Image 1: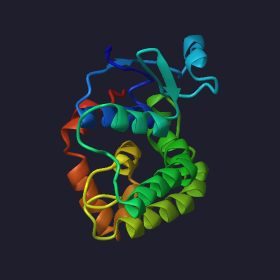
Image 2: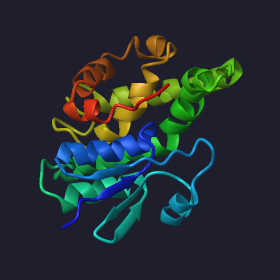
Image 3: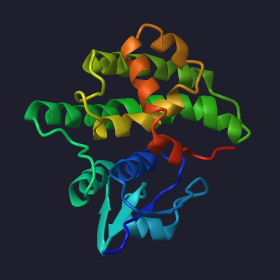
Amino acid sequence: MADPILYGPGYSTYTRSARLALEEKGVGYQHVEVDFLQGMPEDQRARQPFGKVPAFEHDGFRLYETCAIERYVDEAFEGPALQPVEPRRRARMTQIISVLDSYTYGPTVGQLVIQRLVAPLMGGTPDEAAIEAALPAVRNCMGTLEQLLGDQAFLAGERLSLADLHLAPIFAYFTATPDSVPILDDKPGLHRWWEGIKVRESMAKTEPKLG
């Protein structure tokens, strides 16, 4: 059986989440860089008709949408389970992934991180008005995640799950912004969670190369 192939840029949070799942499962895989800063390459559009990343292939089976890729990786390969068995914890994992996709990524990465971190790398200046506009939604998301985490070790319980791997790349960029400091000041649970997540071997292996 051939190793799976993941197509996407290393700097993408969604690509990194899929890579984290592969690393945590101990699956050998090929990562093919797809840089879309100058426009999405046509071969990637052939793999992902909506012009997004990542895309995935395994023995002729093609797949896109990060959550679907993560679940396939967990269910198709040997290794530690990345989804809870208990229905309520599994539902909580799914809920949190949906919260991240629907409400968290846009303001946190699409607005705050792009303006605060990416714009200067590209020779631009952060749009402070856009940052200010994003901050209420970011605060709401982080407060919600703090509440859902509670005193658990991980987002969906006492074991690592896909919810943690979905949040980790977003959180890595978020905590690199100065705006994260006051937002996280009263969120000890997320602080504790991040201290444990950021030192995992999978995080080191998938660290994006920026600048």
